[in-house]
Structure formats: C-alpha cells, structure tokens
Length: 179
Image 1 (cartoon, rainbow, N blue to C red):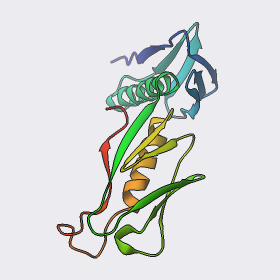
Image 2: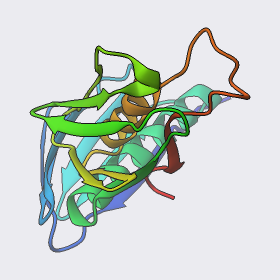
Image 3: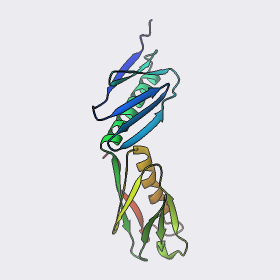
Image 4: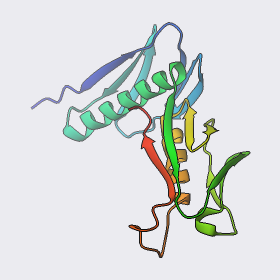
C-alpha cells in the first residue's frame, strides 16, 4: 500500500507578515511579534505567497495529529498578533484583605491569609497584567504565556494545610484565554 502523505495550508491575513527560516516561523502584526520553532520529526514547513504549507510524507495517525497541532499553533500565533488573548482572575478573601501589586515581571500577593511574606508569581513573555479592584486582567499576544501567567498567579495564592471549605481565600481564574 502506498502512503501518499498529508498537506495542509494556512492563509495569512493582509495585516499579518510572516517569515519562515528553516523550521522557525516569525509572525508580526498590529498587536506584536511572535516566533516559534516547529522542529517536529517528519514534518516540513514551506512558504508561498501569503500561505504556509505544513506537510508530512506519511498520512499515519500520529503524523496527521502533528500536522493539525502545528496548524493550530500557527492559527493561535495569527490570532495573537491581530487580536491578542486575555484571561481574567478574581481576588477573593473573607479573613484577611489581600493586596495584589505588579512589580516588573512579578505579581506580589500580600497579606494572604495573614502571612507576613508576600507570595510571588512570575509574568512570562510580553504578557501584561492590569489590576482593577478585585479583578486582574492578564493579556498578551502569546496564548501560552497568557495562560501560564494566569496559572502562576492562581497557584501562588493556594491555601495549604487548612480546610478549603472554610478558607476559600485566593485568586481564581474566571475566564481563560481564547474563550
């Protein structure tokens, strides 16, 4: 039986520019610039006028899945540099008032359940964090950086060693990127 392979195309909007160097794709648009290396065994990326072609010499299930994954990553890059991604978190406390501050590439959560040392969460990449009362908005062009930054903030404010039914204080994700 002959294996014909698989080939899929991604078209880029006019406001988005891209360059493909080997397996590194750089995408730039009105909301920023992203770069990603697609070094997957058995996959090739080619560029033609305004499109990127992702192809595999095999049409087996794993190769089809890899091609679909690369296509999804490229589409997320396009959406990131045109519209961007954002995530919302909510600060909740009942025992001690929590204060949240942004300092450089870190988010400091102070007075969390009465602790003297602030809890710290790292901000990744070009992600921006805005504070508005008890609402935190995390936004940026890279979907993975936005999601990981939101998760870092939520993880930093987890209650440990206490009854979670009583101590529901924390910072919780209420809207994830892309939804």
